[in-house]
Image (cartoon, rainbow, N blue to C red; front, side, top):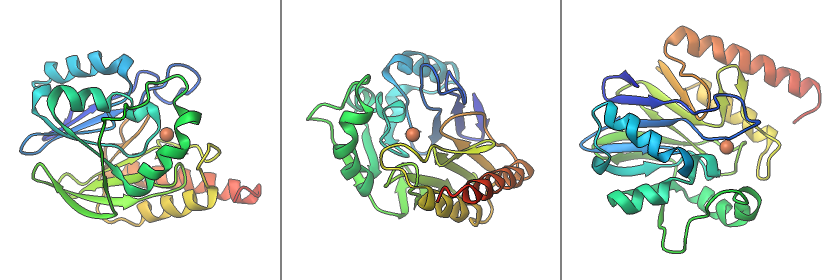
Length: 231
Ligand SMILES: [Fe+2]
């Protein structure tokens, strides 16, 4: 569905239920061409492309794919899109290294990218892709090299699995770190001007009040976790 001018949000099939068939949300932003954030899994790629076409987007216009992190429920479909539409795939340099260590743990039930798949790596900072100026913010905690991505023109923040509506992301997976996660959430809270947050799973956070309310819930959760000694 179109969420704002040039911004399309495709919610994951399972929402915040992680017990079944997990696939991430996907976000598409129109620049000169299309930039896709977290394309999800191969199983749901056909329905994602159908929804894009229904919204008037041509998948052949996909220029780049950004991965917030390397978990397969966000990444698995990226090589197929890259191959079909000659798109480039980006992730953080730290996360690219992590993927090498993590593949046997996370990709048991998913298709691991073949040897010819190229992941271009980037560092924290501002990057222009398809004419869109994106602010890449390294937010470890869920994985060591996860990016949150802020698009200042749309005032939209994409958090991957750092947090969702009402709760922080998983901190107990391989490569996770509670202490890093708490710092990452605080860093994102301190970003000025965010009006919409599109997380890796769960519904969109679509106005400033919801953004603020959500941080209240997240920091209550973090305080409780610290109280329980989870640091
Ligand atoms: Fe994840």
